[in-house]
Length: 263
Picture 1 (cartoon, rainbow, N blue to C red):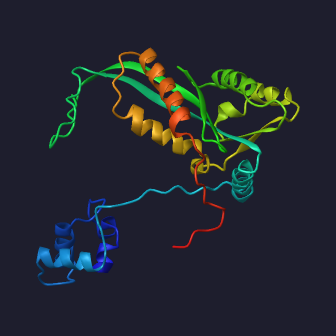
Picture 2 (picture 1 turned 120 degrees about the horizontal axis):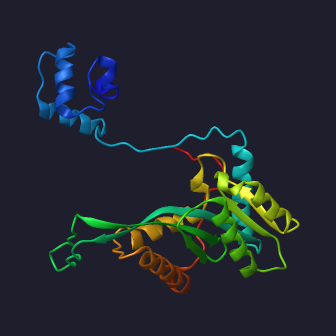
C-alpha cells in the first residue's frame, strides 16, 4: 500500500494527478493488492508511513553552467559587505496591483476575523525598482508603470549619485534582459569600473537578498492593501520604505555558504 501511494496514479491508467485515501483504497482493491480494506485502515497506514498525499513543495533546478562560479561570487560579497565592501541587491517587484474594494473591510474584533469584500476595482499596476543595502538593510526605490531597460537606467542614474563616491559599488541582480542591454553596458563603462554588476545564476533568485524584503512588502502592504489609484499605491509603498528604514532596517542573518545542505 505504501509503494502504491508513492507511485503516480497515471502509471496505473487513472485520470488522477494525486491520490486520496479513498482512491488509493479503490485502486489497491482493483489492482488485486488486497481483497478488501477499510478506508480508516488506509488512513492509519499513511500516518504510520508519514505520507501526506495532499501536500507538495516546489523546487527549481538551475542548469546554469556558471552556477558554482556565480553563487560563490555572490556569497562572498555578502560576507565582505559586513567587512565594509558596499554591496547592494537590486530587483524589480513587478505587477503591484492598485485594487480598490467596493466596500471597506470590516476590521478584526475579539473572536471575529477580518472580513473583506470579494469584488474590487482595478486601477492598474506598478513596478517597484528596489535596492537593498546588504550591510544595513536599508532600501531605496522608485515606482514606474513599466519595467523596460529605460526605466532600469533611470533608476540606476537616480540611485548611484546617492551612494558613496569614493568606493566601488557592487550590485547583485538577476539575468533579466533589461539588465544587459547595450545602453546598460554603456552606463557601466561610463563609471570606469566603479559600478560592478554581479549576476545570480539562472533560476536562483533566492540568492538575491532583496527577494526577502519584497516578501515583507507583499505581506505587510500589498496583500491586504486597498488602493484608490496608482498614485495611492505608490505613496503607500514609498511611505513603507521610509518606515522600514526608520524602524526595521537591519542586515539579514545570511547563513548559506554555498555548501550542499544535509538532508
